[in-house]
Length: 100
Image (cartoon, rainbow, N blue to C red; front, side, top):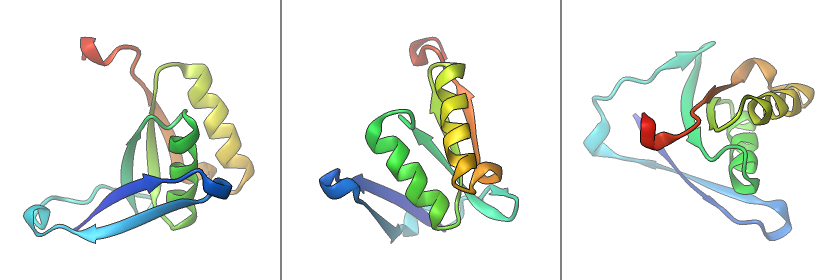
């Protein structure tokens, strides 16, 4: 099992993603999506979040982005679809995390 620790740096629109093995979670299941490991990404509609999602999609991960509005999620789905990653990105709308 691998956990993704993502650190985004906006220098020249470059995101660095460091994948680190974490032995504490070796027994956690990986949820596949179309045969790809699935990453839940909060803050996906922000600048850094969108670039992290882009990098994850490019590296072969499926991404479920958490957004606060359906409009933002649809915009991102359209954006990633136009770059060829439409089947690997989907979103879930959570309006207020305090109510969850």
